[in-house]
Length: 76
Image (tube, rainbow, N blue to C red; front, top):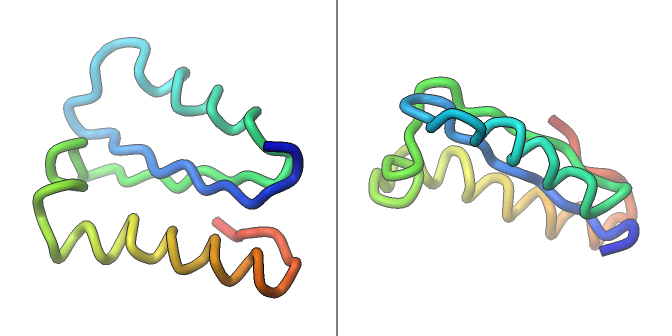
């Protein structure tokens, strides 16, 4: 991905062994990446709980779009 903005959203609750290091490894896909860790979220809650999803991954999408438009890196 080069230096394209990337935000990796990681759900921690009930994560299987080895999942968190794999999520961190995804940060290497771009030199312009950050990880947002959702301590109290599960993978399922990020996809099915609309209120939580909008608050976490919805904001991540908007922040990547803003980073592309402004040419500034995404933030934690």
